Amino acid sequence: MVKSPQTAIFVLLTSLAFSTTSFAQSPEPTCNSVALERKLAGAAKTSFLKKCERQATEKCEAAAAERKLAGAAKNSNVKKCVKDAVGE
Image (cartoon, rainbow, N blue to C red; front, side):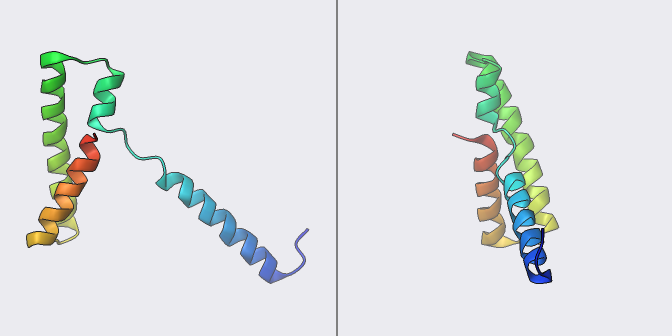
């Protein structure tokens, strides 16, 4: 039972904070993790990774353009975005 309006607001805000955190912690799978999951090797893996990196670059370039980034900020953002998409 909620004792006061302040407590109700606190409970609501706390639950919202935890619900958005769970969404933020579920990133898209990386190119390398997908290749590993599919058990790709050799030329098939190389081809898949090149295609995946190209698609990631296009997606990251579009995101940078949408955010109206230019110059070093754009390059840095795209580089990090592609690195995150490709994975280790």
